[in-house]
Image (tube, rainbow, N blue to C red; front, side, top):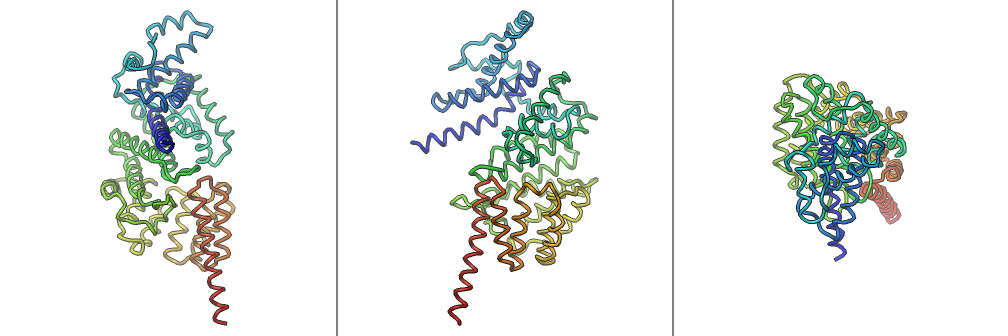
Length: 436
C-alpha cells in the first residue's frame, strides 16, 4: 500500500507540474498582475498537493486550481487600501466552495472555454524585451517549465540565492511595466523567438537529464517542451530554427526508453539497445531535419538535430559516421561557439583521430570558468583517458566528476566506471603475479 501511495503522490506532482503554466496563463489573462497571479497559483498548487492525495483528484483539476487561485486573488485584493474599487471589479468573482462539482465554474473565472491553453502567450510574456535575457530565461523556466529555483540555478550554474533574486526582480519588472497579456505582433515575435527557443531547449534538457535527484530523466518536462515546440512550429512553420529544435527534441527523446536498464542505472549511448528507440519519433525528426536543411541560413538547433539524426540512423554504435558528426560539430562551433559544443566536439575528435587528439581539444576548456561547477568536463576527460589507456587518470577524473553532480544516477554511473577500472587493474596485477 505504501508503494501505491507513493506512486499516486508522484502522479499528482506530475499533474500539478503540467497544469501550473496553464492555470497561471488563465489567471494572468483574466486579472493581469503577473506577480500576484504567480503567488496565487503557488498557493493553489500547495493546497492541491496537501488535499488531493487523501481526498482524490477532482474531476476537473485545472478548474479546481483556477478557482482556488482566483479566490486567493480576491482575498488579497480586498485587503488592499483601494478596497471598494477592488470589490467593484471583482464582485463577479464570488465563488462557491471548491469541493465536489462546484469547481466546474472555471468558465466563469477565466472567461474562456475549459480547453483553452494560454501557455504559449505566457511563454512570450516571460520573454518580453523589457527583461534581461537571463531574467527571461529564469522566469520562463519557473512559470512555464515548472522548474524549481534550485533546478534553474543548476541550469545556469549560479547559486540558488542569486537565481531567486533574479526571478523576483523579473516578476517586479513585469508588474511595473504594465505588460499586456497577448501574443506579440509579428516583428516583435520574431525578436523574442531566440529566447523562447533557448528556454524550451533548457526545459527539455532538464527533463532529459535531470540536474539533481534520484531519477535520470523527467518525462513531464520533455513532453511539455516538445508540446510547446510543436505549438511554435505550427505558429511559425517557415522558421528553420523552430523546426530544428522540434527535430532535435524528437530525435533525442526517441532514445529515452533505452537510457536506463531494468535496475534504473544509466546506459551510455554506445551500449543502448537500439530496438528500444522510438522509430516513429526518429522518422518524424529525420523528416523535419531533411525539410529544413539547405532551405536557408543554418542555425545551431538545425545542426544539433542533424548530429542527433546521424546517431539515430546508425544501426549500431560501431556503424556511427563519426567523421560526419565531427564535420557537423566543426560547423556548429563556427555558428554557435561555446564550451559545451567544444566538449562534444572533443568526443567526436577522439572517435575520428584518437583519444589524445580529443584530450588536447578538451584541454582548451580547463581555464573556462563556465565549466568550473559542472561535472561534464571531468566525465568526458575520464572517458577519453580510459580510451587512451590511462587508468589512473581516468579513475581520478570519474571520481571527481561524481562529486560535482547532484544527479544520483550520474553519480552511480561515474562511481561505477571508476570502480570497474580499479577492479580491472587489480585483476591485471593478480594475473601478472601468477605468471611470475
